[in-house]
Length: 351
Image (cartoon, rainbow, N blue to C red; front, side, top):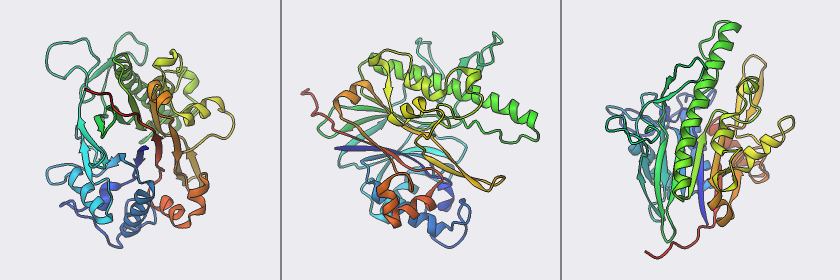
């Protein structure tokens, strides 16, 4: 059994100093009313319980002139004795929120393997590499806009010991929240512009998905898409959510991706749906739950790997809820909860 997971860790970067060491003290973390020591201990509990073979970390610690995502996360793994003690990163960004893969080196080899048309070079007819620019008319004015990723997706070639390789694409798509809006009119304008960019990013990812599926690759697309079916009032304006685009809901069976949580959301837009994140609304003094994080597997993997999904929700998952220490740790560690999939990978073909 192979377990692959995604986990968005809020303000992970603030738990490390300039030399990539954990700041394990009682100063405040980036999370409300949670100290750094409390968040670090909570994360240790969550990672140990999750026990995944590979974990796509969304909002991983910063890389820069002095800081290193790899060193910081490997220090974190050493502190808790985690078997996922090696780290892979792709294209670094300037947001202090990297995308990284923590993995067990005894069970797999992994490589950053970006696909697509490089920013420089002859046109190959491929969609652009994720650190490049994507041209798409998102506001229907016959003039294509330039779309970029502030956090370029991490493309991974993963070689499990004794099994065929798998492609991973770790994604942190554009937030649709109207940050910076000073009135309702600005809020609407910014929200629509952000949704357009988020949809364009999902179209870009889907183009890469199509290419992998056409080549017969086993594929997992996972991460925080800041989106879900029926999540906001602007969805009717655009016809589909970004998640539906990446899943390929209108495509034939071999070309679709599978995620039962997304499927449940699409089938139950007006009733309870699974959730992966919990945010406090300071205006209403209540918590908002949302489905933002996904692990989507290709049809080939879905049919051969007998996948079993789990959202590590402190209240909705019975085991997490009944395990008091884990329940409390999930609430203290982040505003998102891990999502995992267990797969029975067949033995690799003889070379």
